[in-house]
Length: 511
Image (cartoon, rainbow, N blue to C red; front, top):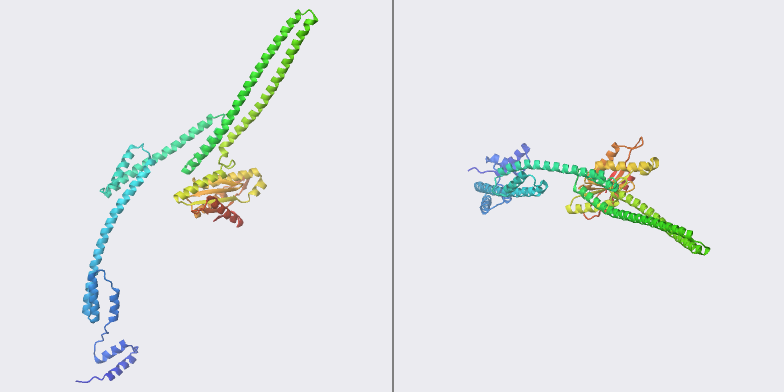
């Protein structure tokens, strides 16, 4: 047996590494060594790597844990066949487990879908119930279809295809009823306008009532919402209260005038009777004078005539004084009636609205602010406040006159109203300052609304005579926080408006 010279083999292996310019790593050295002695170049057993793989694998049940234990044992024995068997068994058990989990998941999803369908049907039924009062009960066919729809939705055995078919039929009928209700609303509004116009035309003497009716006609112009209707109701109640007081005072004054006229007629009648009595006494004295023969008989007759004349003069003077007093009282009462009439004329407009622009005044703003803040907190919806001030308004007054200044305020209000939504509230805060309440508006939307008003003002010039005048305004906007008062929000908007003035005017800044 030929002995192997391992030193020579090692030197030859190093020579091959140098010739092939291979790095002198253990793997390259073993490759060259095996090549020299004619042994297959098989890498060493990667036990560390296989152990790392085994630690990564996790078992979901005892069977899988048993397969991992077999894998660890095979790695320890350097048995490739044992490793292959353990990994195959572990992979098979993983597949079976995944299939079972998928099946369970499918069953659970199917159960959840059934629950979701049932819950959806209940929500649709609840939605239909909430909407039925608005549709009225005049349409019997719609009422029957509503009952059938609710019964099918609440029946857990009803097929989904039947539910869809009934919903299609119900939706068609619902659209018809909704359109009919909209038409009814329009006709009722037209009828209300007609009644108010007729009342206004019939009240020829009570011009105060005509003014009130005209205000109501403007207030019920569509589109209507609950805020506007609530505002109309409050306005009517306040005006009615003030007018009832004023009219009662006017009726009392008129009754006083009637009493004085009655006294006047009575005085005239008394004077007429006194004159008739005096005349009768004079005639009687004349007849007696014809029968007098001596001076002594004449003296008593003259005394009677003088006494009668004095009584007549005294009574006439008293009656004259009384008539003069009645005349003065009548004049004062007449003047009071005229003042009361003017108060009645002003009552329709001065309750909560600015007489110049017809926007809400400070009192109206306070009431609207209280209402909107309460709605905001109850419904947890946003509410924004804008404070705007006309730019260079003093210059308009000085150059064009105060009448043009008033007309400019009216022009601004008219344009801003066209740009706002029906539910927004416009109020004159004082002078050329206005406040706008914008419910359901976050700060960004409110700023955009004010910028839209500014653009509309640039498109519609104010005419002072034949001169076109561009009116601009600066505005600040604030969104109320949950615990903030409306007054504090207006104050923040006012501060933002002041900053907009200082940074160039005709701007809108948020606070």
